[in-house]
Amino acid sequence: MRRTIPAFIAIVQSILFLVHLVLYVTWTFFWGTTDPSILFWLRAALALLSVSFVAASLLGFRYFNFAARMFYTLSALWLGMVNFLFLAACACWLIYVVPELFGVRLERRPLVIVFLGLALLIAIYGVVNASWTRVKHITVKLPGLPESWRGRTAALVSDWHLGHVRNRGFVRHTLRMLSRLQPDVLFITGDLYDGTAADLDRLAEPWAKFSPPLGSYFVTGNHEEFSSPTRYLDAVKRCGIRVLNNEKIAVDGLQIVGVHYRDSVDGGKLRSVLAQAALDRNVASVLLVHTPNLPQIAEAAGVSLQLCGHTHRGQFFPFTLIVSRIYRQFAYGLNRFGGLSVYTSSGAGTWGPPFRVGTSPEIVLIRFD
Image 1 (cartoon, rainbow, N blue to C red):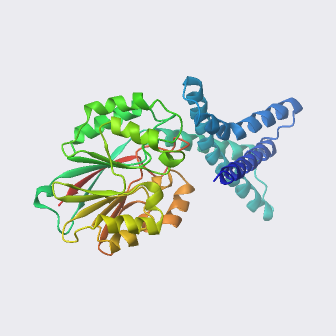
Image 2: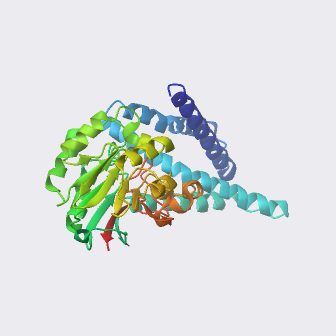
Image 3: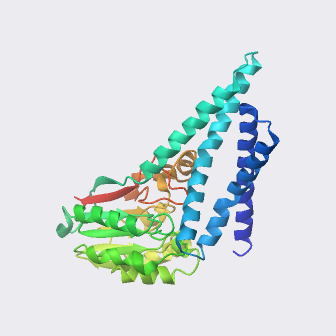
């Protein structure tokens, strides 16, 4: 693990260097900048911006103050912007080079103005869209559902990523939405916290005003397990939320199993936890895990409904395509695997760039029928 993290940082930083180099070459070629002083400052600015997110992330794991939050937020915004600027730069080269192969030469400056301007507009939309949480209504029919659960609703909220970007205001906003929905029970399937430094006690305060009749239940995501998850689990408990530590409980007759991230992505461990849970196959059950990786194991154990998140549905292009390729039909939404129903949420928050293009943040309200 200690060797893996530096290697990962080196790979990410190398990619960011190359992306910023492409932006520099694109701008100087299409705009025709030749002034040495302008080129110097442009190189310097792009060089600093290329290391900003990695630097902010490293600082963010240790410090939580106004300066650290602002640095992280601004660098995350720039990282999201760079994604669209890079795609715009690629489009500039494609639109310019292809006609030139047939002897048609286009004006350079209009190309860079149009495509970089479009990238800016998309980025602005992405920030606004990421702040607009929707409510997704679904209905599930589970064999063996206790009569007391028919017509009841559960709220599923995953991937809040509370930390430097999403903080106390986001908690209060989301809890106000949940209070209006009045669910009977709340399920949180991991990444409630971003895994960075945070004022956990302050984030816990707004929870005092929200308490669903049948309780709130939580399992960890990968971000709570970047380091020891103890402080996050303690914070969750202070919120009045029940942590399900690889265990089964019965809530008014409904079987609910929660498996933490590290064990839920290990096939052997997940199979062992579900075996120990000894699910009654004649009674409906709900499995809370962070990722939609191993539905075949849940289905074999007799689970009725698996609830998860993690994917963010990719957040924005081109990661939407990558996530769809990795998780296929389980990348988002309600799907089936044999006798198992699986719902993967796109999440309420964002990781890294606070952008969403082609996806929406959501609270899922599940009606049991």
